[in-house]
Amino acid sequence: MMSSLSTVRSIYYRGSLEHCNYTCSYCPFGRKSVSADTTEDQEALDRFISRIGGWKYGSLRILIIPYGEAMIHRYYREGIMRLAAMPHVIGVSCQTNLSFSVSRFLDEAEVEQADVSKFRFWASYHPEMVGVGEFASKVEMLLSLIHISEPTRHSLIS
Image 1 (spheres, rainbow, N blue to C red):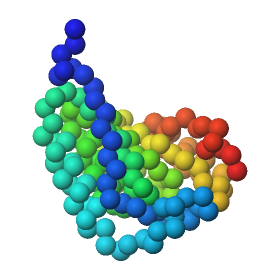
Image 2 (cartoon, rainbow, N blue to C red):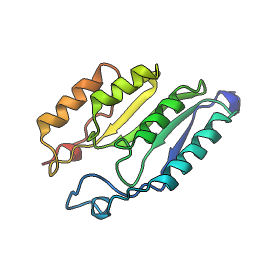
Image 3 (cartoon, rainbow, N blue to C red):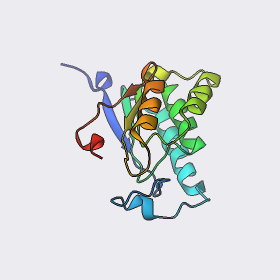
């Protein structure tokens, strides 16, 4: 029988981010105005990361699933790197539309010497906002280093 210390648990983090840089007609988050003040959300993420840092009950997988686009914010990118540096965190995933600068993110990860093998992206294609070529190009840039979610039929419908 496995002890609770050897069990891998998944924790989902939603945060207070509620806006997206895309304005898809079908999405309520794209209709919310982008607030310049993300202090509350950043503080909440910092508290979450601190709590995860003190976790002593086995391995964790973290999935960040905001009500909006997190990866355009530097504090989310840095937070993902901080989580990946923790030995008990075996994977850090983030739901994203891939609208952030992938090359900048990879440069930041290199500077921070981040363990990119722990990164996962749940990437969704938004045909109203970006061409399939641009989206595919970003996926290709990431594929050699980072796991990208398998496309679903829904994510490919235009």
